[in-house]
Image (cartoon, rainbow, N blue to C red):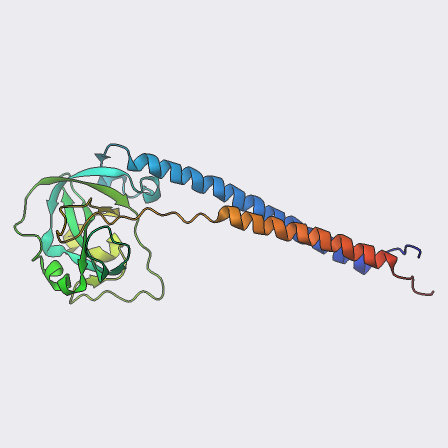
Length: 254
């Protein structure tokens, strides 16, 4: 059987398939780049978690600060809790490190820094039956005045179009976002830090139940890269087989 010459339409199709393969290869390379970035982030966070606490960034830096650059960094803060401005954030705690889990609330209390500005502190988890006590301040006792605390920096949770409005009468929020939480508190709290702090675990059985920070970074980039590279290889192999078949077909009579 003689080899026939391919027509314009066939070459155009072949070109499009090669472009598709190139795009898939590009996406595979991009995922490998994201893999390297994610591994660098994980290494940086591991180093931060074991580092000595540093003073929390002050309000003069908050307008330009990227919270991701200090996430999970241990920090120290000196100031005073504003217990009467405490809000609660609904959650369902699974794989708890303490004895309490299930539906409940994070207890988010403003901490007024000695040098000015306010940082929200996640004092820990309470089961849902303790929400009112947490919001009304029944779980903290007397105002301790000026204290120094240590915790780790966390980045705000983002609300989306499905996030309900805050329940202002019961001081309930749905995301740990300092700016949203500040709207439930006294306006005099401004400026508010663009991050919040998780406290370390206290004594067993204490409420709020602190020390529930979970450090996780989904890292599926290598699998995604293999998938895209696979698509590129399949596209080239199938194109080669198709071109071979087309070239072996009998030529149409003139």
